[in-house]
Image 1: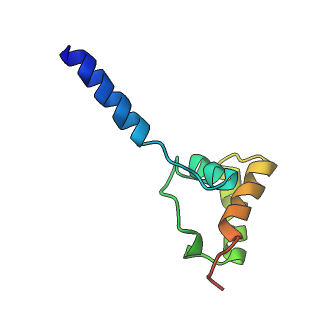
Image 2: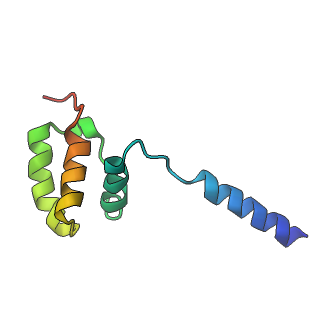
Length: 82
């Protein structure tokens, strides 16, 4: 019985750790970029800086064209940094 309750507890913990994404672009960003480093805040850089960063990082992360475009879209839309 103890093991059964422990398994239920583990399932509850695992389910609560699931992240809810606002968009497909956000999901791709977190899945592809957080494997090597913590995800950066969108406002950490302006749109031009994000383009330059993604030019370098897309090669390291082995992103395909669609993934690269989605991440750039996510990082640059609604950014407040000029």
